[in-house]
Structures are given as C-alpha cells and as structure tokens.
Length: 99
Image (cartoon, rainbow, N blue to C red; front, top):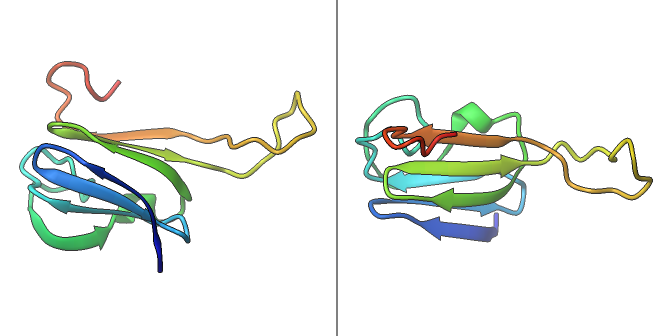
C-alpha cells in the first residue's frame, strides 16, 4: 500500500493509503484515534470503525480527528462524477470540535 495523504495533530497522526483505508497512531487519551478507546498506538493501525468506507481526506487536530469518506456516486443534479460522502469525527468534543 502507498500512503496518499497524511495529517499530523498535536499528539497523533492520520494517514490514508491508496486503497482508501484510514490509519491512526499516537496518543489516544482523547479518543482521537477512532478506535473506540483511549489507548495510544505506536504504529499505524486501521480505523476499524471506517472499514466499510473509502477515506479521501483526513485532518488531525489537537484532541480530535476528522475523516471525509466518499461513496463514489454521481450527484443527482449533475451527470459528472463528484465525490460525495460523509464527515466522520472522533476524539474530544469539549469545544464543539466534533460538530
């Protein structure tokens, strides 16, 4: 696999590989790694909560993370293909960071 995107936060990092898999590693004390726990990871691990999604962008913040996924469908208002999908957030929502 080849890394196509990476984002470094304060204490954690995120990456996307060319197959659309999102990865996280670093400090997990705020839940920012997306693993459903607060455990840190020294090496990149797949974000299993997004196993059925294709990640197209990541952003690592101070205590939170954002991942944009793509469903690969055409927009109903346009005949051209345009990425459409969801924004996923995890980690600390103390200041409304998670939306």
